[in-house]
Image (cartoon, rainbow, N blue to C red; front, side, top):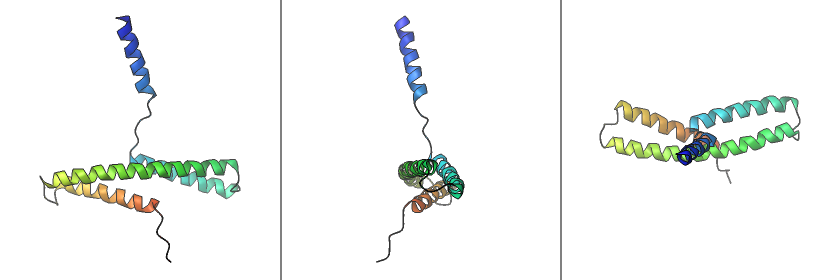
Length: 119
């Protein structure tokens, strides 16, 4: 009995230690906050200042996380849209909601990816 309780406590501790999964919208909000923080800091500090460097590095990491999350969620949404398309017509509210979500994800990915340079 004590062993089962100990295992349950260890499992609960392990689950509590896991970071919650963030959605693309949450990560996008975090990126916006970091960009605002960078703008405020760069107005008063030089680019080589450790705080500026730290914020820029964090922005790069969050952008990468956001891109991966957007791609994953977009693939899931497109699959869900295709599956619902077998049951509903395009104008159905569920289809419209998914189409709007897909559009938002595609637009966010477009913002993250630099445009190809003209030759």
